[in-house]
Image: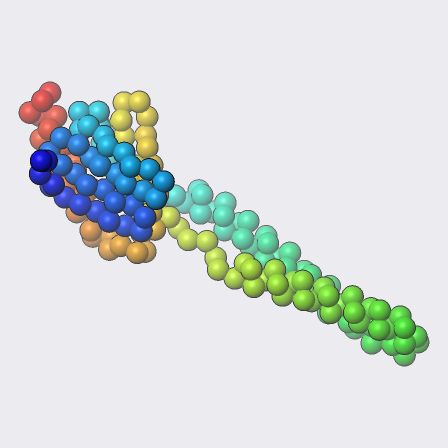
Length: 162
């Protein structure tokens, strides 16, 4: 039985450090890394991904607001046309209402902005592996303590086995 040195649980990510291995459990995978293959560990904020998602979210909100604004203008046109022709006014009133409703539904669907996610990055000679998690659900001090424990264990392991 291996001794557990430290453990981190954040969002859908569980990481356990033992004397010889690093066990990582996510919603889609369970992986184990031998400490001899790990060069380092760190926590990175995925700012580029967040900025891309935020821009896409803003674009969708802008488009939805555009539908609402166009719908309001069509409603104003409907009131003007209503004096000339009841049928044309009613038709444009219906079109304006549909546009406003479509814009409202699009706004409701996109009311939650994206979150800035972080990742535990494991650096190995074959490349890096990132394991995403939401840092707002865990105390950042816990993550820092965990990373410091892993770094200290890696240093001791490499010193004893290097």
